[in-house]
Length: 105
Image (cartoon, rainbow, N blue to C red; front, side, top):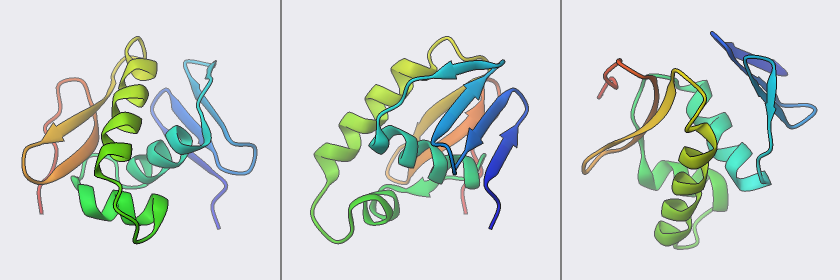
């Protein structure tokens, strides 16, 4: 299994639980790291909210928890050009470069 994902200036190391943007390490909680990892693996594509919640927390209801984690991750990515977590109404979330549009299946 791949232990490191790179998207331009964004690097996610699954083994060490580290994330770097432009060689600057981001400090993420475990949940933020898991959320980012799921989005990085499917960069540019919309990941449905239900699927994100299920991958992160199993079958327990997690809509509010997901909202909180997305908000926190967005804040930490705020100065990390060009990556953004975009909301696609009634669909889910996508990790995209600043000017890109998410792919909806």
